[in-house]
Length: 219
Image (tube, rainbow, N blue to C red):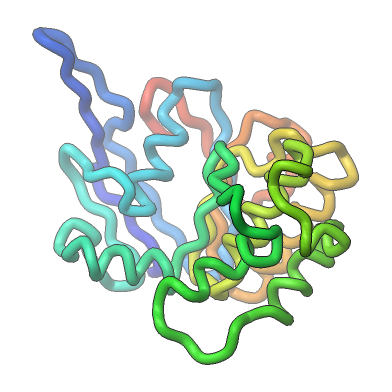
């Protein structure tokens, strides 16, 4: 089992009021699984991905990834695990404006000591999603859809075991979304576990396993 969530909860309190963004979620993924979570905005999808990626701490429950209980790891070890084994595509672009497209894609490669510079892999990823001609461009000259594709390519650079994608086809036209979904499908076929959240009905059909999230619960 690559990923296992057990009774995962995230509770927020404001004064004398509280609510669960994520409530009692159980989920297991093996290598090569392609799971899609559908649901309305505010249903808890983004919070769930952030818990799985170790960006948020749960109020209760467990996230066990690749044999490690995320809550038992130090900040340093958790950061290393994310960099080495998890590719994360957030809703926002999170692209650094002072770096070229190529350098933005390669950036995670340099956050921990590795040999080489991943230039060839970065260029191959950019080509696969149709923006290799923008390798030397800066973010300020890119459209929203192009920025989205840069973030997607960056998530793949370190050959992750798990890909977490939050609405990855937002801002993409039909052709670009097709490039991206083929990349995800190929990754799953090669043994990567893919967990994608979306409200786009055209994207849902790509998943091997489909879940619905409502009011913090996963169905």
